[in-house]
Image (cartoon, rainbow, N blue to C red; front, top):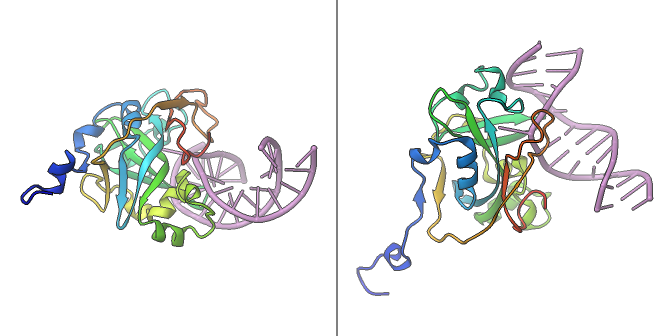
Length: 203
DNA sequence: CAATAGATCATCT
DNA sequence: GATGATCTATTGC
């Protein structure tokens, strides 16, 4: 490599943290566009391969469906922040807030393809057999990345959790299906995933 | 393979 | 007092 040429210039583009404007769109647009992006926390990071959109209106499955409460406050707040909540008394789920302040709408991150910090992830998820199982579910990926309710409300354009567009983006097809594990508004096609990717939580 | 039960608790009714 | 945007182990085909 020639002197004076940065690695970024040599490879064409650097990894770049997604700006606030990325999140100021509908939850569906943000959910689709988050596929292929990378979530980083500390030494661990993973590529998003599965998401679900939760809407501000006409979506009974969304936590925001009954208006703002103490728990759902961040969903109504500034886009580009993390909404982390406890599910089934045991696991935590990571969401990214979409849409402008005042408008509810968020995206559940359902599965990651591990990118860095694999050894740390394995330590945090000793029951996982292969690397596919480290983060192929919403409760698993928060464990693997060390994300907890402490991170509820953090700004993912600033850290300690960051979401970026990787320097090298591979092409992929987007699959669409019903969301997983809900009983209300269950038939809406709001789950998006990288077609054929082995780290998706189900086919 | 599929189906099911148990773990465990903050939030909301 | 009931309800989950889940995961794992176990049981049954």
